[in-house]
Image (cartoon, rainbow, N blue to C red; front, side, top):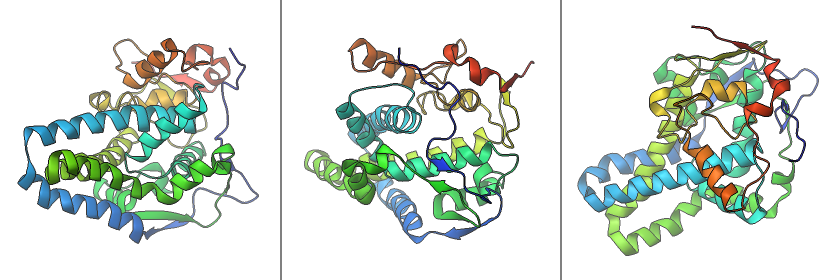
Length: 304
């Protein structure tokens, strides 16, 4: 197995003199607001009018596939955390599936994730980055606004930012719903488009915020990260729909681990998918908490 840093810093964030995650202003972002609000608007009008067993089935299949292979494994565990290695072509395919989830492009996902990760490791951070406000206010902020820090850190996405393919995906990420919509329309008509694109994207985006909000507010904990201003909680009921991502306390404890559901009985379909790739010879150097001795030194176990 290739040697790796078992307690790496946040990869893309570059600390510069005076940078701070505390002071800043939340501003309405018309592009994000139109995207999220538009998808939801189509759903509220069109979903009740087009419901069918086949539409529900295509929603379930595409949502599960893009969340599992795309968001959980491709975007999060591979592209952001490099928790396992795989062929370049497979990484791109997984990340493309992650783009279809509808949250952001690959570089945008890294920027959003790593800024929040870096901020939550500091003694304090802006309420936007900590999900500290009420549920309704946090929903408005996260789904329709953006945070502008007064003194932000630098951002360097590394090889991802140098890739022409990933820069192209970043510029065009919203448009990749269109070819999928055309295929769905050709097979199942408008019902498949509404349920397979609009409802899927709206549910994934809203669900991503909702679980993230809960995971920083309440729920079980196994670990506390020393010196971190924001601690995480597990959201057990969301383990299956999030493909294991809802064991967020475990993830804060071992962010570089490909396995997030680390205790007995904790469902982690993302990790099982990575193990399947390994059996096929398509994944290797899979990082787990068992090898993260350095990281354990920064943790305090929570005893019942």
